[in-house]
Image (cartoon, rainbow, N blue to C red; front, side, top):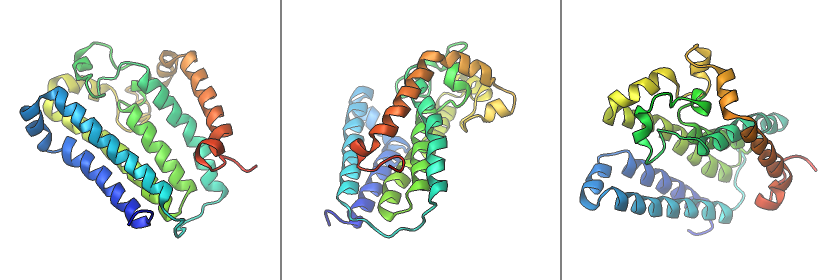
Length: 234
């Protein structure tokens, strides 16, 4: 089965099953109770990494499959527009305190924690991955790409909602203030008047924006070398 589309889809299902079947079910507290929080996180990290590596290798080995859609220039435009937003969420999300991140749940009770990119979405890294995956799906309707980007889109976007669900269930009093002042869906709290876009950008800061511009430029010009596909027509 190695080197087939079947392997790719099995790898995609294993990635989703290991993630949602362990971290988002009653199996998680059972394992934590049996081996401890630290050992559980180490074990889960190894399993998640192995599943991700298999997915990427299976994608690389899979043959070029049927093309289910081809949006042409429109698909490329989606990537061009969405990727800078995804990069802002990613760069800001990994460089500021985030109480929804694994191991940072204790920050939920900190006053004024909803700052910077959290004013845009309280799950910035998950949405960065999800937007990246969805944008690349728009530009790649080939079955092999759907297996890779589709599974990562489901992993990230469903995962963001499950993070909220877990915090709402396990830490309702600490999570409620963050939930009331922010949104999972990017920009929703800003549109509803519960947050300020101007404050978000001011707190994200010029250095992070410069980092996003440099990263975006590097990805545009290095995409062919890194991934074997040009980001724009040569």
